[in-house]
Image 1 (tube, rainbow, N blue to C red):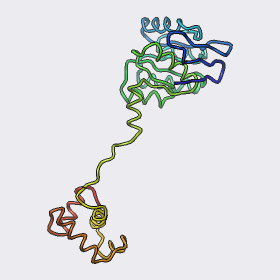
Image 2: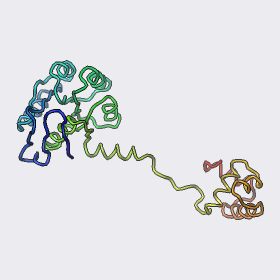
Image 3: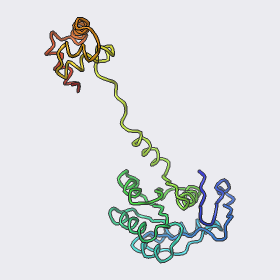
Image 4: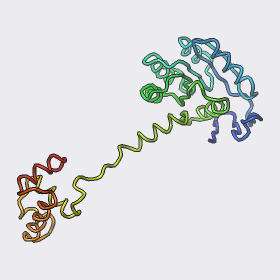
Length: 235
């Protein structure tokens, strides 16, 4: 992952692990922590305090996230404990009231509904709260630069869903492509002459195809072939 903040700093992510990140701008990246659990906030504060290019400017409960983010205008709001619709409403309102603030959701919830609701509301990232130090730092850098960041397993699920449904094999694999075309048109109610015109074949050729189709499908006549075809979704 490589991220570049176009405003004032450019963290070198290649040196985050164990060394820290360098800044080429004049100010550190600012963060507001919002989580109902003080121990979670303390852990994040300690983690972010271990690098000199991040400054925590405020921390609050989840209910105070919008107020503190609008008041402090940080580069990143880290929002814990995803709750829909309350959390989604916070992010949506923040994108209107302080559009320059990126939101990184940091939550134990990892179901698809919560993740997609957060991204739709305008969150720039979604991490499980079990993410390690480097993943959190990289995510903060990335969302501040306008990237969308997801935990690896969440990203994998999203990629699978965006790839669309699996391609299923067509019915009646025993039929050749041309025989399948003929059966499809038969199921649609076309007579032999119309099928011949559609496929640019002789009517006698269509009759020959139908004979082979009936044999391969184990049916006695056109009517039974149509029933089989429609049951398989043709026509």
